[in-house]
Length: 305
Image 1: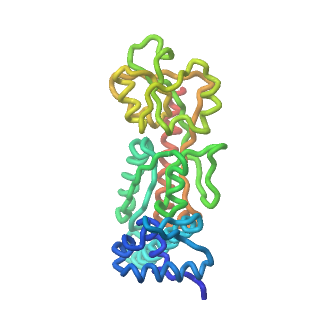
Image 2: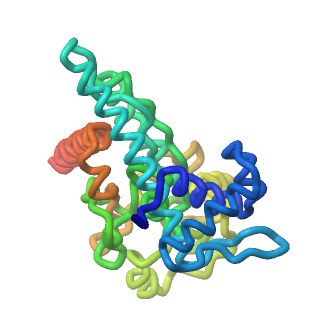
Image 3: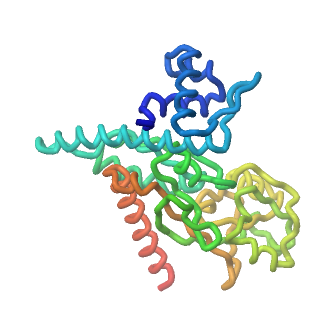
């Protein structure tokens, strides 16, 4: 049998996270030699080198990154197996069958404005669920990468034709938000102002629209997140082009102006693994996310009437 044991999976995940055998050993309560022996045994079973050893620790090879991601996901499924089995046993006595930690990755504006009402309803219906929300910048692999790497059970992510659900994951669109112009309140010609921008803003779903706008200058100020952009705009440092969720947090001193019928939009959805999609906690969260989408759709329809 060449199957990896759960403890071997824990060692792979710990070494990948700690970038070293000694640090992983401390985390796991093992000796360094035991960690090293476990990694060598796993490499023999899999048939590839998982870590490059050197003076500065143990760096995962590309194969090691893949193995660590799968290890985290398998270990999480073992946790879910235990929690749901215990819940099923308790259900005969009328107890809530959904319990345990639920790891969620979300970009900043989704964590601030989309998730709170969703998690409030989830807590009311399933008090045994323990949400753990991690804010992740939606650049590079973004929030979906947290699910692929086994660090999150579900991610709130930006989706679209040029940023689809990644291979190996499943998901769905929750809402489509419009971009708008935000500028200092009372400014009569906001399109003449300098541009304040941030790294997550102009990605693939707005790039073509952005390139076609000859009135948008190069950014004179770039910030780390959308909250900093809004703060700078409120201080009169320029204008910004931002998606709807970010504009929920627009401070006093700002004004929001529509960009017209050809305005860009951004799709916000969720992604998870096929295995986690069958877990009771993730299913409960998806139901609440879809309920929030339905509320937003009703609200938008009333605005247009």
